[in-house]
Length: 299
Image 1 (cartoon, rainbow, N blue to C red):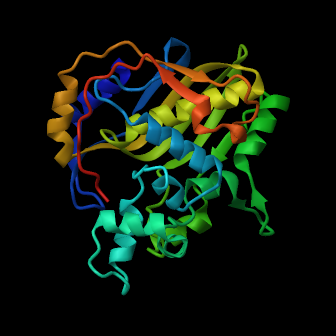
Image 2: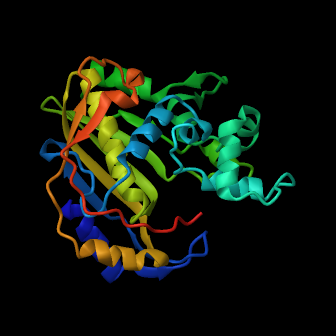
């Protein structure tokens, strides 16, 4: 994972101070790229422990077309909780509950979760339930897999998260989540290997990007298995890639650590569709990271 650390160091040394939506402030670069050969191991950071259980559940949640955090909360995955909580705090129904109390209400009450746990038209909606011209739902993941199987040389193997109509809803503040950071990803087949490139318009490099690398690498493995292909590269292309100013000490700690050998990903070979995978069908083995490094999330 030297690629990740090299860009982290570059952001620290060359990043420009920039204000941001959260008011935290960042060191920012534009138009960077890192690449991982998935044949060399599963690209899960070893210079700090990364929450693979949360990554796996989140990806399965996306593939269900779900946008309500209750699925994650019920599995003790809390990575999306702050956004709907902030929406709840701004409402007339807020009675001073802490984030933990809010999450407990989501867990205990389906009615409360239905009202306050939905993030709006985020990834699950765009990937699986994109709204077509006549109001029909379009499953972009299903469609791109079919195209990989039948026309692997196509240059149209794309999935878009940037639904302009829905983005306006997110920007307007009618929903709790920000406009999608992962705007589009494209697949590429060569020599019986499936590669994936993600364009990410905005990237929290310390907290978010390690998740993103692992998530899209996992998705590439899953789709490759369904399509009878080997894995190639995961290419991560960034718009605004940034390090929050309250993550600088953590980044220094991480850069002082020596990377260890990459783990391996094991998928249940009996699963023939990405939509049939369960958590128990996905395993990362020989993962030996340095300890986790905690850092606050900017909302």
